[in-house]
Image 1 (cartoon, rainbow, N blue to C red):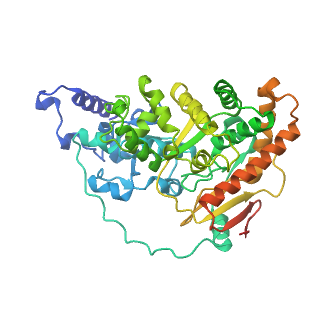
Image 2: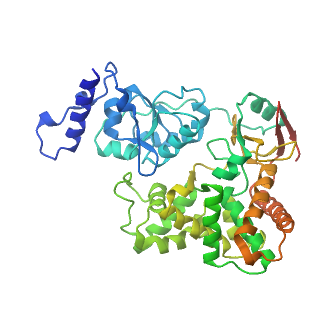
Image 3: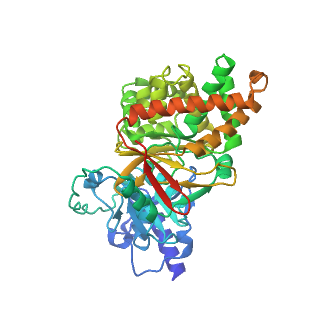
Length: 476
């Protein structure tokens, strides 16, 4: 039976590749290419292979022929489903994927679907991080599905709207939910070896170790502090040197944008004649319109000739999707950061994304800000390399919150101070480790307070301590 399925699968692929004008015998009908739920699926067909970008992918023809044997999940937003869905696919918006997947079998094959393949790829990475061992993204998304003339079904009727929330989180409600949540712990040493400090943004889809701006915010903080103590501006080459050393020393470098910044970027680029005919790499998912997906594809894989003008656009505040970094770019004096330093760091980051994408964890966050509180995840003891640090998801039940890890961030900054002194060499002559650590701490407090004042001035603030049990206290 396994060999029969492999032969059928090979015939399907040959038919898909046949030129126009082939006989009907070489082009199976819709009924013949549809998935047979009674057929057996061999294990080799479930050995999903990673794309050049590192994410396991399957084609639309694979899903058409074998989708009934796996869990197919459409991660688009509800309003996107009106164009049609794959028959039998479940609908879980990307923002809810991590929460919903906690109840799934991590050994069950899962194929994720979105509009163009971008969000489903991000979802596949999320599920892999949760321990799923057979997960793939459908290459090209529903755009490719439609281009292949595969049939679609009508979207399911939306569930009855939930009543509009009028309450805000309380210490009791947060404590109840966190007490029931399986908190994932990460060794502090892993942060030093693998990077992955995420932003405090409440739209993140998985449990985070949060600090304003994530890795990008922390490196900007370190570089601006070094400029203050040395009383000189870092050159482009020096910023490049520190960035490369940071990635080598601390692992992958996290930076995020969002749909709104990408939409604004798309509008700017579409009006620029240099980008009129620009399109992503043909091997990537097709893009039908110049929206956020088109802009994201260009950001990840820009033609060489367009990289300089693209960098100019990417460093404009309207096109910076991280709220913390955008605020620093807009109000450098308020954050005590030299005007232009943020743009310089962003340029270096995106150039690295283009020639060494494996070094950059470039995330796109979706939806609007609906955070209802600020949660400080506290540790009631010092943080050392062997400390287990609780990672908390920004989605807490039906609440969304900013997540900040003050003690963890302070520990990482102490390591950054030693790193800066080592990499700065003669540039840092006369600066002691203690003085640099103190300066980093002062500037970090100033920048955190500035960002909270802009993004969450009226929100309640809670301290959450996780040890043998969860304790929550409202502090504002």
